Amino acid sequence: MQSAGTGQELYRRAKRLIPGGTQLLSKRPEQYLPDNWPAYYQKAKGCTVWDLDGRAYTDFTSCGIGACLLGYADDTVNAAVAACVRDGSMCTLNPPEEVELAQLLCTIHPWAQKARFARSGGESMAIAVRIARAATGRSVVAFCGYHGWCDWYLAANLSESDALQGHLLPGLDPAGVPPGLRGTALPFHYNELGELEQIVARHAGDLAAIVMEPMRTDPPRDGFLEKVRSIANKTGAVLIFDEITAGWRSHHGGIHLGLGVEPDIAVFAKAISNGYPMAAVIGRSGPMEAAQRTFVSSTYWTERIGPTAALAAIRRMKEVGLVAHVQGVGERVLAGWRSLGARHGLPVSISGIPALCHFGFDCGGDSRALMTLFTQEMLDRGFLANGGFYPTYAHGPQVVDRYLAAVDEVFARLRLCLKPGAAAAALRGPVAQSGFARLT
Image (tube, rainbow, N blue to C red; front, top):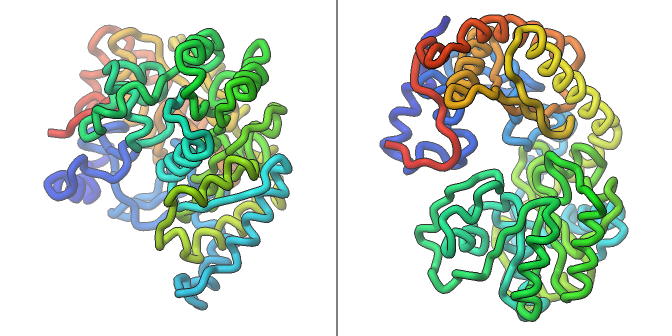
């Protein structure tokens, strides 16, 4: 057992100074272990994180929210960035690396001929939707899944407060989104072609884009992606694949390359540059040329670190055979959760693909308390851990062995807390929050 430490002290101060406490919902300590999560780091390397008190933890969560696929502070990527910083990362002129990166991305994705760059996932999705609307002269976007914080997306909740239910982050409040955007973002669920067809039946003449992740947790069924591609062709809508989370993990490039369906536009961020801010919007010449008819421009989209890091990361991922490594690690962890849950008689549910794997507890109203207790017990054993795990190249066999040994111990402990209220009673703080919530 350990004290909450310096990180929680700093976080209490942060909540007085920063609305929402953090810049990213997914990094809120309340999402993991309220009052006891380390909250801040002083150093990260490979899959090890040191908190402000110098305590080391092995990271078996989302590993930088999916950004650091090679592991934290990869030497190859860092060396390229260090040289870039030494020679000047910003200038009146443009960095040549952005042309090289555009060429590399279009080579990896032969269906694409053009690229534009940004520095974060949410803004790059907004760029892609703006381009699609400019290219088609239409307004309505049909989408499934989670695609960021921008107005075009949150407009879905102007019509129905639960429109985003089942799309990763339900209940997002559209406060501040202009009410005039009502009816411009219409959700459908993955593998539910009929829902998309209903949108098309009502809005075919004004459908600018179909936006979706080609795959996240469940594989496409019954030719779902091919049928979506056909609908886009028939309606003239731009098919946009959001590869911000799935890209590079299960296939070098986008996961759509392994699924055999080509979009009109694809968006990448997160792992494309291994922790340095970078995002790419690539696509076919036709729709991408519309970027010249609408204003899409920002000073820091021209800095040099992002494309330099992306070039180094993409080449490094190919060189080390990252996809096979991540697949193997994820398969081991999924199998471990399943077998250890059975060994200890825990009601464990498994979901996701090996590169983006998840588990949960099927204990009704006590499920979240049980997961919070799992996080607490794993933290005591030196692991950052919850119900989701995004494997990285830094997760080697011995690290996985140690993790699964700790899970074995913790599952044995949790087996004793299955009675109603027992898990919550064993916590040293509140039960973890779920989704978007206002902090008090």
